[in-house]
Amino acid sequence: MKKTSLFFSLIVLLVMNSCSGNSQNNNYNLDASAFAEKVNELPAAPVIDVRTPDEFGNGHLRNAKNMDWNGSNFETGISELSKENPVFVYCLSGGRSHSAAEKMRSMGFKSVYELDGGIIKWRAANLPEENVNISGMTAAEFEQLLNTDKKVLIDFYATWCGPCKKMAPYLEAMKTEMVDSLVIVRIDADKNQALAKSLKIDALPTLLLYKNKQSVWRNTGFIEKEALLVNIQKH
Image (tube, rainbow, N blue to C red; front, side):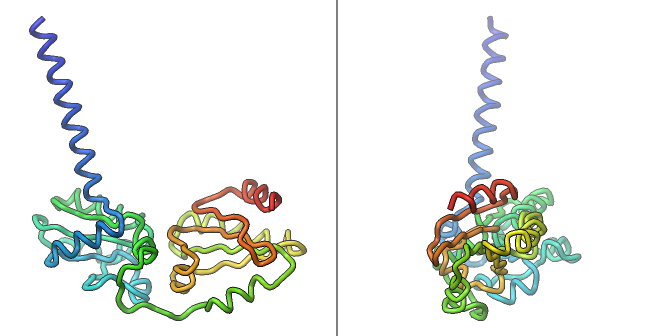
């Protein structure tokens, strides 16, 4: 009886520790507002932007340092930071920064805070940014794209985005296949930040379908060609 009771107690303890660990991990994955508050709370902690230099040059968080996750010097740059002190990491939508954060934790970093949803969520929350690239398509130019009697499908993408790359071939094919009824326009979110922000694009890829200049359907994330065609035909 005592052995059974001891075994049960050990199981409960393991479960509690596991739950506690998950909660702790969640505390390091912060939405834009919480991330901003934490950065202000810890002003000495380095803020690492793991996007490409080109992306970084088009706008970044204040005092951020660029260490390209896909570059050859990422690990060298990170190793120069203190593993005992907090570090903040972010990218455009959260994928690369999560991989970078996991790598840093495996290297022994104690507190790595991630910006959930990346800088695209930061922008959607109207939080401050430095060196913002205000060039790109204007609202008037975008409205001109909709000036047609055909349906218009807008694809907001990024060159580094895996799902965007996967969808690109069939979207290009659809331009020819549906030329009589549909206009497809692909817009690089990195190069059109102001436009993306005005349209509340907070994740990639995002598809917007317009009919008679009115938005009739929206999809965020990867979608198969067949499912996309069904939704276009519905509207």
